[in-house]
Length: 250
Ligand SMILES: NC(=O)c1ccc[n+]([C@@H]2O[C@H](COP(=O)([O-])OP(=O)(O)OC[C@H]3O[C@@H](n4cnc5c(N)ncnc54)[C@H](OP(=O)(O)O)[C@@H]3O)[C@@H](O)[C@H]2O)c1
Image (cartoon, rainbow, N blue to C red; front, top):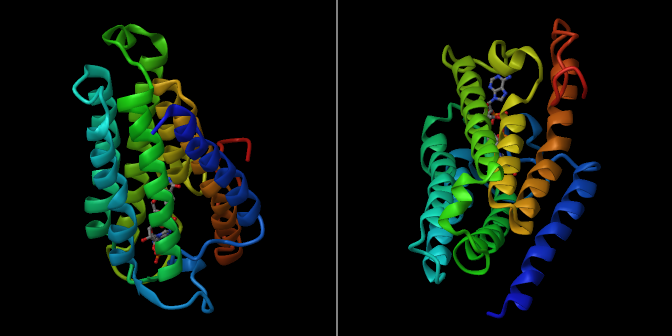
């Protein structure tokens, strides 16, 4: 595919970020759990939904990456490794660790599969074909700053996921999470995810990476606000100083 045609996929992802942000200001996506609602059609167990909707992200990324003429170069391979660390965790580890018995609408799962397919194409094709990353890129500060943000964001995301999981260890329903990033915000897992993909955008210094970072912010920002409202209305003793997403700010 000529690069001019590929660019339209990147523009489509940027447009999707905008549409998603506006739509989620009015509707909270019912992935399941506390925001689950009837009226979204048939559902599947959330664990199944997570595996099926996230699996295309690592599997198709590898397939698209291997199509690229730069697939054997060092820096593209480092980016491939970063992507896989996140998505093998999200698609094949996280769902098996989940303690939730909630269900996910098939519609949400289908939309996520479509997005993950587009996003894998946009990012994998950039990394291994249209972008150019000579070995000297590893000495560029943008690479190191981006990789450091990616690693820090992933750590915050996975640790916060673990804190939520442990709340369910003794059985029962929802509780107030404490410790780690929860000292400052209600959704540190989302904040970690946003930092991670911002790091990816900086490390790859690309419109493709920027489109994904913006989509993540557009998708998880409104959801973080919805989670925060839910905590405040559900728990009268919810820590008043805790913010929704950005410590001390929002
Ligand atoms: N890149 C993206 O655009 C994107 C999109 C979506 C998700 N993600 C990532 O996927 C992960 C999961 O997302 P999510 O929206 O499902 O997160 P979430 O709403 O925080 O829920 C995560 C898990 O913890 C449970 N849980 C949440 N709060 C709890 C509480 N107070 N007490 C007990 N259990 C609680 C949930 O159970 P229930 O299911 O029963 O509520 C669910 O199993 C996050 O790390 C997020 O960053 C990324």
